[in-house]
Amino acid sequence: MQCKRWNVNILLTGGNGYIGSHAAVALSQAGHEVVLFDNLCNSRADVPGRLGRIFGRAPSLVRGDVRDTDLLRKTLCQYRVDAVLHFAGLKAVGESVGMPLAYYDNNVSGALSLLRAMQQGGVRTLVFSSSATVYGEPRYLPMDEQHPTGATNPYGRSKLHVEEVLADLAASDADWRIACLRYFNPVGAHESSMIGEDPNGTPNNLMPFISQVAVGRRSQLRVFGGDYDTHDGTGVRDFIHVMDLAEGHLAALEFLGTNSGWHAFNLGAGRGSSVLELVRAFEQASGRKIPYVIVDRRPGDVASTYAKVDKARQMLGWQARRGLVDMCSSVWRWQQNEVEHKKESI
Ligand SMILES: NC(=O)c1ccc[n+]([C@@H]2O[C@H](COP(=O)([O-])OP(=O)(O)OC[C@H]3O[C@@H](n4cnc5c(N)ncnc54)[C@H](O)[C@@H]3O)[C@@H](O)[C@H]2O)c1
Image (cartoon, rainbow, N blue to C red; front, side):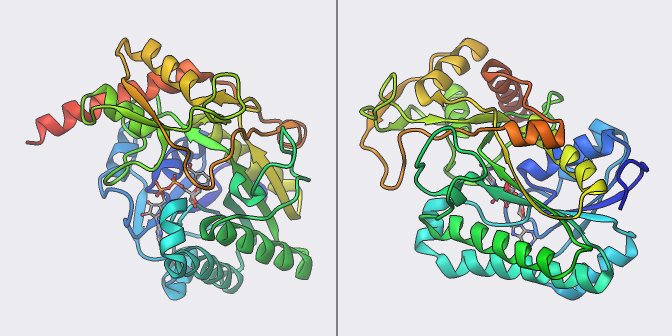
């Protein structure tokens, strides 16, 4: 596949979700045709319509499960797919501890099903949504791609298993072109405020929680741990704007246009920010006070984690450009827009 010959057809499994929908914008605006494949277990049916309002034409959505190999194979053929971005998966670390089989089934069996369909359909280019969780406890910082892997929960292990399957596959057949993108902490929303992170129920991630406190849906933020060995005692993470992350997928696809084999890249901002720094940036962006209370540490959380991003910069020609205030103001606009949208539809 040569991505430089524009109008490549790209299938986005889980393309209706948070990161997939933002990647759809970046890919479409670069001239590619995108098709979404999603079972909507964690996203809403109106996402294609919202994407259409951003880039002029709603992309096709195939409603299906990635464990349905036949449907995937037919979809690859029907849309003459050249490359796949595999976002579909379950992603809540805590939930994965209580439901390991559901996580292995969805994330590992789902990936195997996709790979079988790709093999049968003759599609050999894949970008996989991996995670910094594959590194487990940080042994040094910043973490580069050589950092030992060793996940500490079923979610992380499901990602690691799939990465290993992909490495074996690439070693078995030189036609495969595979990039595993190890995301750090994606936050933010597209500037149009048409799409953003919209979790069902109580958010697992910090940013949606902060924004729900800001609009009054929740009374206060619970900060897990105020006694870590960090500059303000709260956990330090590598927050990356979701549109920077989306552009990282475009860069990875272009890279795979001229490089076969298996490759892993960190996608992060390359710097750590504490939970309280994010809270302050959100207050600055929104003009609202975010009440918070410091509670006990959560089991399994580490003090600090952030990425070394030199490999992506050198090999993909990509780096994150947007800062914390950008991330927060985009989420604030998106959250307000959603509140208005929900009022209108009542
Ligand atoms: N958001 C993060 O913080 C983060 C960090 C690291 C890695 N990731 C990975 O990135 C990917 C995308 O994450 P996201 O934040 O956009 O999550 P998301 O839940 O918003 O999107 C995932 C999408 O996949 C769909 N899906 C799930 N299982 C499916 C299945 N079996 N068949 C078809 N569709 C299915 C869901 O309906 C959803 O639309 C996931 O694989 C996740 O593990 C996310």
